[in-house]
Image 1 (cartoon, rainbow, N blue to C red):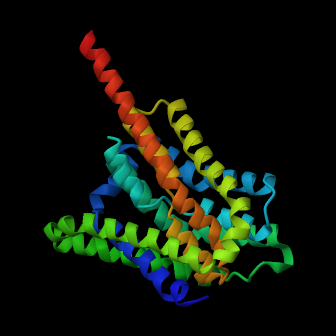
Image 2 (image 1 turned 90 degrees about the vertical axis):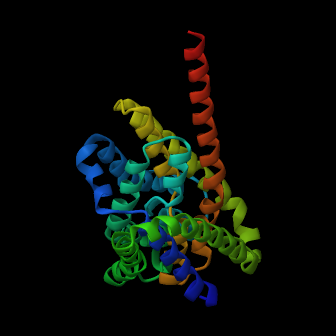
Image 3 (image 1 turned 120 degrees about the vertical axis):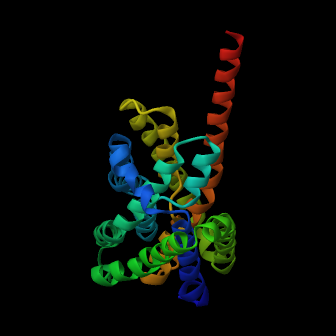
Length: 292
């Protein structure tokens, strides 16, 4: 652990979660009742489908055990705040996306330690670092629920200020996170150079499989297009900063954070391609309707 993982990374996670809170109000959680089928599909995709996919990839793809454990960490993380913005750009159901991100972030305080607690000894055996379940739950609560709650409090007390500041805070947090990834890669370059060939393909496979299966599941239960978009992006955009925080700060293993860093880089191009695909499809549909 160094000054980046001990202090800077927790600050980035807190800033991202605070910016998410600025965009939230109590009304957003009404989506659970108003759109129960879509919400249930999103919940199942994030909490069950993604860890299952991560386990399948980590088990079947040849990679060092420490990287397999790191892959399980990113698979167990909630969706990232950028999924809300990309859902908005793709003309998806932004309210559903926001509520899913918030609720799953809260639930992951418990689900993430459980998945990681199983994965560490399974993949690493006796070399697995010790994981305190209660300590991890407390650490995640402090780094996620507290800043989100503070952001929501600011939104409730001074809504005009919160709405004005939130886009800037979210963009700043995203830029700082990407800069941190590059800084971490530079600092750990010998390890990155040695391990990147082993982790790049499975991380990309996990990302594409998550988006594809979420899209297919949403279509299978006949959700309307804007909700299909929201669920697909929610499963594709993971909270990479949280994954890196768990690996490097809570578990003290810089190599284990590489899958989270790699996912954080790969998820943006694939998500943007999906957004372009959706927007081009809408444009073609509009032209067909115009010709009719």
